[in-house]
Amino acid sequence: MIAIVVIRRIIHVDMDAFYASVEQRDRPDLKGKPVAVGGLPDSRGVVAAASYEARKFGVRSAIPMSRAVRLCPHLVIISPSFHKYRSVSQQVFEIFRSVTPLVEGLSLDEAYLDVTENAWNEPLGMNVARRIKALIKETTGLTASAGVAPNKFLAKIASAWRKPDGLTVIAPERVEGFLQQLPVDALWGVGPVTAKRLRDHGIETLTDVRSAELATLHAAVGSAADWLRKLASGHDDRPVSPNRPAKSSSSERTYAEDITDPIRIRDEITKMARRIAAWLDARELLARTVTIKVRYEDFTTITRSHSAPATRDADAIVSRALTLLQKTEAGQRPVRLLGAGVHNLVGLAGLTALDNDDDRWPLFSAIGSTDE
Image 1 (cartoon, rainbow, N blue to C red):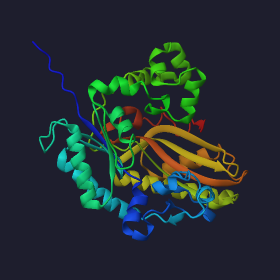
Image 2 (image 1 turned 120 degrees about the vertical axis):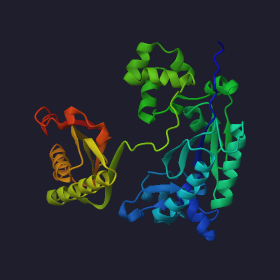
Image 3 (image 1 turned 60 degrees about the horizontal axis):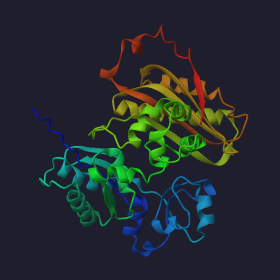
Image 4 (image 1 turned 90 degrees about the vertical axis):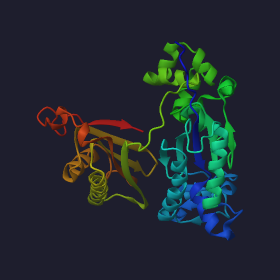
């Protein structure tokens, strides 16, 4: 009996500078100008998105808007219009789902598509991606970049290869050559801190990841060693999962002036926790882990977390968040940012006996803490 191996055709589509591009589309006077979407620099706002013209000056998402203005004094700042971005996103995702039901959204402007089988009966992933890009342009007036590859990891790397308005295909026979030119930063989940750890152990490239002693790799990244080695070899069996379940939710706010009043700090965390509980309730989800985030005036940022039986009870989540707050110096030290969140989410069907065993897991028996 001959085994038939089906090579998947995965596309990763990423809209180009999405928020900023929507604003430039709707305001022709902004075309060709450096644009940043986000908060105002004098209110400690941050950049949510930057146009490609702004990126030439070093303006990037998540940096303080005050820094963005220093980098680009003639930067045009636009307040976000999320209702507008969601509307455009719906148009884009309708295009995706007209091609295949296997669409895994990662955000408003980014998704994986498995087009191994597709509504157009098109055998070449490159042609599917090209048609999708054309439909997005025709429907929304915006451009998207796409990567086509045999798996999600490679497709995501490929989509960023020739931005904006790019299309990069990594055919199965080109995978090895492509991998050999990539640094460790390209690996899924490897941010600046992990990349530095790897480089401190002499691991600079994906080839180094594959050839390193397993003990060395474990010393650098711990339990992620085996997973990173698989990725470095181009192996990624994760399926494209439609209706990707939420894994967490959070709420945070940066304040125009540092907060020192403990009562106000408690009130802010309480409001955030209740907002998150309402989010859980609307989605019929429960959370096992509650977290808070505190950033002090000197930008030192800490998180505290607590896991217990799953709940979406607002009073319980508030109580846990406030108990975690007591494990910080908020109120003793000025605070510039506060946040609260929930993780390890489950639906009612995912509850276990432990979740209903209050005696075994007392509410605050095992408060843990981690620093960012």
